[in-house]
Image (tube, one colour):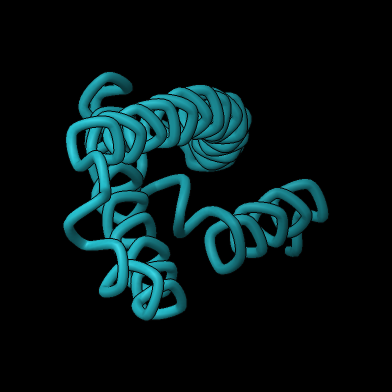
Length: 133
């Protein structure tokens, strides 16, 4: 005989597992600090690459000026300015990544807690239905 409660629970669990649950289950394999640090590292690397590309494009755009004034330029001030902007850029990007990925991890944990609660309820229904031998 069909049990509608079990069918509903199994349907909810299957929908969760096939859609957003894949990512949540993958995240559950990490500690929060490890996951956030890994994502921050990836973000800083991508920000560095992006910043380098932007600097390269600016260099190409201003190449004529740079060649004409190569002797007159104050390279120390220019380098300090570029490094300062880079540090600010990476700090803001890293901080935003830390906050964003921390919130993502916490939300994932909440959804997984609900998922495990439904699994326990389904297990309880199975145990109630099967006779003790």
